[in-house]
Length: 78
Ligand SMILES: [Zn+2]
Image (cartoon, rainbow, N blue to C red; front, top):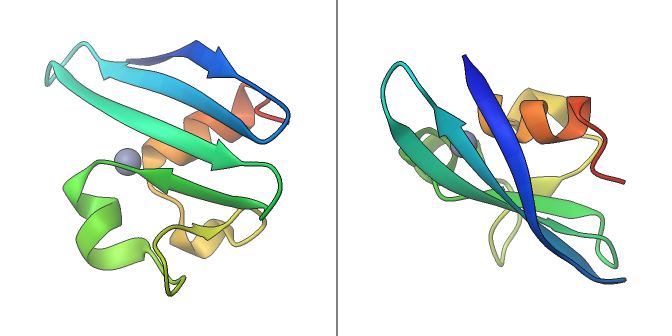
């Protein structure tokens, strides 16, 4: 099971810690509200998913979201 914790929020950014209690993996998801992009520190996202030139993926591009970003969106990032 994975859980999300909001650790920082401003008008431009929010940061979430996503913790997986099966693998004990912990990743940081950042949502950029001004660019409508999101970013995750997990290898799945970094090596396979991100599409934007400066990193990250569009918030509405769920083909390119890892499970951590999906969790944040499901929990209501915006
Ligand atoms: Zn991820």
